Amino acid sequence: MKKLKNIGLRYGSFDSVQARRSADIEVDSFLCQMIGTLDSLLFEINDRFRLGIPIDRVEMV
Image (tube, rainbow, N blue to C red):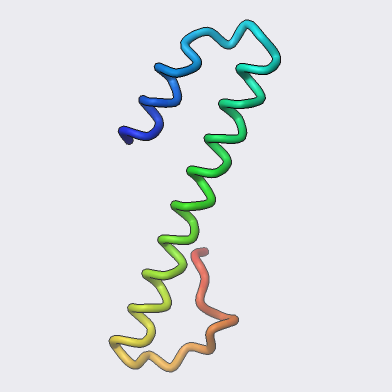
């Protein structure tokens, strides 16, 4: 959450196209990191509990 607040503070005004584009890139990066973290957690749960779910089937629905 702190990362999102920092993005808001850094680009306080989104009047310019460059500010919107830069903020959009940072938000996309943040969301990709969160998705990657969630994927890693799902793989770890699958492995730790020996669920035997094939890796290509481990996903959020």
